[in-house]
Image 1 (tube, rainbow, N blue to C red):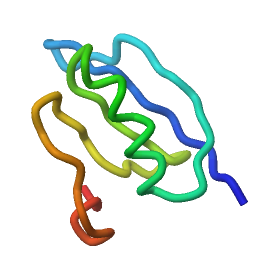
Image 2: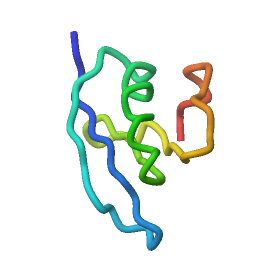
Image 3: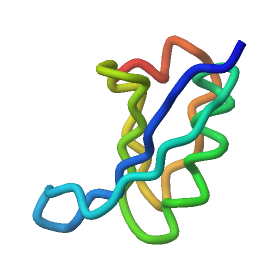
Length: 70
């Protein structure tokens, strides 16, 4: 089963600059996919109305499910 996610690129002023919808089988998979967008800046990953994580360009991916909750 796949879940619907969005990766939002956050501008320096905190406003969303763009969004990329995608599907993933888990939060971990979604974060791995969304990591590619951090080359453009900070990325917020959402699964419908639930914020999964905020990814910074220099921040490594969380290693456990508990550390992914924001």
